[in-house]
Amino acid sequence: MIRQAALLSRRIITKRNAKPCRALFSTVDEPSSIPRESMAYDVLIVGGGPAGLSAAIRLKQLSIEKDQDLSVCVVEKGNEIGAHILSGNVFDPRGLKELLGDDVVNEMDVFDTPVSHDSFLFLSKEKSFEVPHLLLPSQLKNVGKNYIISLSQLCRKLGEKAEDLGVEVYPGFSASEVLYNSGADESSCSGSVYGIATRDVGIGKDGAPKETFERGMELHARQTLFAEGARGSCSEDIIKKFGLRTGNSQTYGLGIKEVWEVPEEVIQPGFVQHTLGWPLQQESLMKRQPFGGSFIYHQKPNLIHVGMVVGLDYENPYLNPYKEFQRWKTHPEIRKHFDHEKAQCISYGARVLNEGGYHSIPKLTFPGGALIGCSAGFLNSIKIKGTHTAIKSGMVAAEAAFEQLTADVSNIVAESGEINSEEPALELTSYEEGMEKSWVYEELHQVRNCNAAFHYGFIPGLLYSGIAAHILKGKEPWTFSNNRSDSDQTLAAEKCKEIQYESPDGVLTFDLLTNLQRSGTYHDDDQPAHLRIKENLAEVPKFTSMQTYAAPETRFCPAGVYEYIENEGGNAEEKLVINAQNCVHCKCCSIKMPSEYIDWTVPEGGGGPQYQVM
Image (cartoon, rainbow, N blue to C red; front, side, top):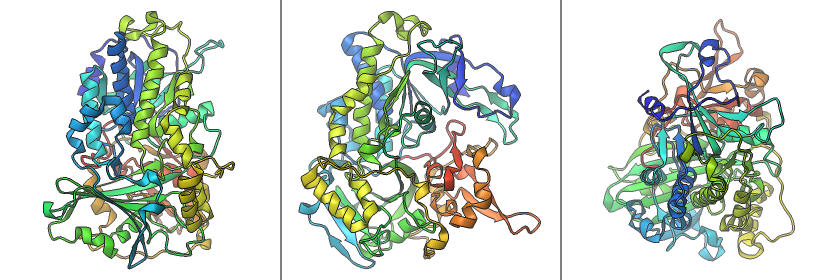
């Protein structure tokens, strides 16, 4: 509420005619009928991750260089910058050095652990085999180039840098609606995006306003950049509304991570190890297997980052990504890193990531805004990195926005304090052109078919990736297409083998709810659930998910949100219960649910995980 008051202390402008993307509180007539207050900016950025913050910083750098100020605002749903940021993270500094310069980056204390050892192992159930470096794609090599960092901590540094340059940064505000210009005529602004509305706060579970009720704010902008990360709710609505995805379907992986604290004498600073094979790929390697792998990174002074990524296009509904991760830690080659009586797990989290690559990138722009970072999907799954490309996309978008928004200085909000209603909606076509000419597209193009190649089998996919990285480099005259969603890849339970998992020991392996406490996840219990069954798919959890797919949502969710319980009265039919308060905002359920029956909307701002060292 204090932050809302701080927002309101700025200039308030007249509300424009808005058509919200969705009515979140359609059953609550009185609160939703209250007019929202609003504020105007030249550029609004939705999401305080690396892409969004880099765009904000670059805009202000250009303002100083060109002596022409633009007003820039960043809104972030986490309670602080970095609270919802999770990544491996072996960091490629290329994009950041272009943004801030070598000297500034080299002096940042988050870069105190350069990669010193780099290995890639193939695991059988009991043994391990190191893959020779000569056989690995050059994009996988980290020694001498990259650093082991906490991305959540880096984002905090970037947030401070943005504020120092004059960016208004507002954590704790959830963007719940995209605002579209509407009108009876076919004006140049009709249908364009002109900002977002933040979610109302102080509404109870029953949909009635509480004493703490406050209407959300409308934030208007000449350009709105969406930097929500993979599967962002506003970004997905925009992609659908403007038909931006015309190529391959996007495919995703679920990243699950722990951070361990160990004695300093145990740490091997700069140690990087990736693995393939057991337990995800343990059957016939010539046949299709779950796409994914694992990592261990040692960071100064005493932290081990450990995690697994599981491709969500897996077929067996009995697969449990969280339990596969716990099982993996018991391998002798992995267990030894935690074999100390003082080793303890201090943090846990999960987040989906884009794996579709080059052919799954949508059209990046639309009237009034653009998609940047993982909202667009620039992650390189073969390189196992996406932060450097996200940063670069934010910079390119900022440069395109600055050029167009300063072409007519009479329209600049930083000067006038309001948006000129006569200004036509702008589309940053030079942003997409700039990305196509950048090293981001060059890097992604070289491995453009690698992810889809694994659909033909694990060994064929591995061999193709090696050939593509060393010889073809994306110049092959064919394209492996994928027009099926990850949800559609799930097979009926009767066609699959049930998977048995060992019980956790509480020392190296943990039950899910114990680990969930380490994420710091919190939501106000007395608010409408932000995970909602789509009205037109309400029959799926009742008659399809359990009966056909053996309730996969009870396994793939890394936060224990979904469970089926017996109906009252002894009815044999089980009822779905959604424990929304457990949600770590990974977005997995919006992707892997049978028929994608869940609509992932934002909860009240500030809710969710509280990551510190992820």
